Amino acid sequence: MTSKLFTPLKLGCIGTLQHRVVLAPLTRNRATEPTLSPSSLAVQYYRQRASRGGLLITEATHISPESLAYPATPGIWSTEQVQGWRQVTDAVHEKGGFIVCQLWHTGRVAHPDYGSHPCNRELHYQPGVSASPTQIVDRQGNPGKTVTYDGTKEHAVPKELSLQDIFRLCEDYANAAQRAKEAGFDGVEIHAAHGYLIDQFLNNGVNRRTDEYGGSVKNRCRLLIEVVEAVSSVWPEGAVGVRISPHDAPNGGNTYYGCKDSDPDAIYSHAIQLLNRYALAYLLVTEPRWVGKYDSTPESDPGFEMPLTNLHKYRSLFDGVMIGAGGFTPATSYEASKDTEKGYDAIAFGRWFISNPDLPERLRTWHDYESRGRQGVPEPPPLNRYERATFYAPHEKDGYIDYPSMDFFNESTESTESTKNPDFKGMVAGKYELVDQSQIGTSLKDIKSNPKSKM
Ligand code: FNR
Image 1 (cartoon, rainbow, N blue to C red):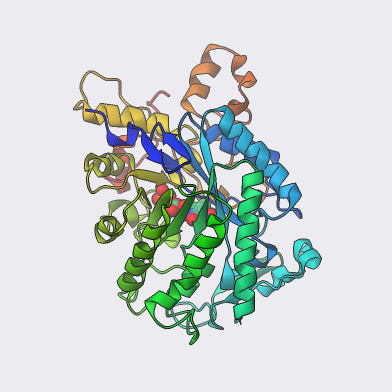
Image 2 (cartoon, helix red, strand yellow; image 1 turned 90 degrees about the vertical axis):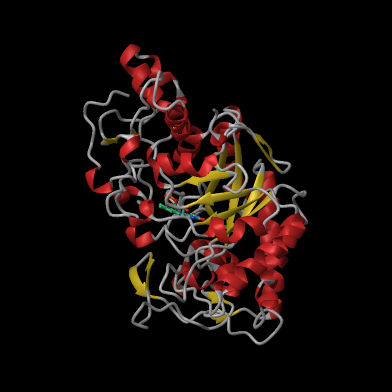
């Protein structure tokens, strides 16, 4: 029996995927300063992770400098940025892959200090805006902390966007969508998740507006829908995806940047039902078992052991392709893909794809092994263990392009030709610990490097 993850999937007008192991959007802080264009390392990073018929989603990419909230994160508003992204999309297409650009506005997560970034000095945006002037606070109610170019500072009280600002914001989305087209992307994804601007409008713990963008669930979904329409004025039906992150606050569950709602199920159900009107390429849903503060090592992450919640709540509400993300392991991706009717249509991997550029191939061997009852097929290769210290390390090639693929091991032991493969440039054998696929998530405390495993 073939595992569903390795069967084709039609993705709107983007194309037909040949497998359903998707690269989740992953901020890596390696953009070139001060232009905030992707660097040549980014071209290599995405090329390494591209595969025939595989889907890559870019790291979150600012639609305008109003969104700047972290150092060295890329944008998609300028000609220089478009040129940088064009090299990325060309590299992915050469390998037969698909790539969509995740469009991002951070809203109140942006500290006003980013107003002095050269991009803002030129374009005169004032970062630090939101639905309402509600500040990000920690669990004790004190102002939360964030990174600036001058170290850690307290989050500021954001400026409430006026109706005129919202009109301009939608134009910024349309402009970024147009730029993404010029850069050769196959589609775009609207980042409406994880406590960033659109999520701030959805959640009534942040959105206190009394105009047509606040109050009822319908009003709080208005910005999301207007952004979908703005982006769809540039891209055809079936080329636009949306990411949301339904959470389970206020019951003590995961929230993103303090975004809470008095009735999360109501707002996210309504949003999904509205999105059905737009023939989206896909809806990417984050499972709340992924919590940033626990995601540092495989052993310390309880999310790998937790059940899916959003799949069961929202699958039946959405008519199109639904991609799940958050806490998937080789074993749970296999389990989840067995249910062809009600499961996710595809699975986006974050951390394991950071450390395994050829993750789809490594998972394929695991899925084959499992589906044949572990008999008569070679044991699947282990995965490189990820190292969180280099997840967000500005400008570093370590932890970015040096995780080795299986082919790298095979070729480099057999010939010296490996250096001719552009994917292999910078890869380092033996630098990272290896983890047996069967151990990931099933017995976290026992995960150990597996020196005996051969790649
Ligand atoms: C993320 N995530 C994320 N999500 C998103 O929508 N845009 C982004 O730019 C990022 N950036 C990012 C960076 C890093 C280093 C991590 C670890 C995560 C969330 C990501 O897409 C994914 O949902 C989570 O990593 C959970 O999936 P895994 O890692 O459990 O497979």
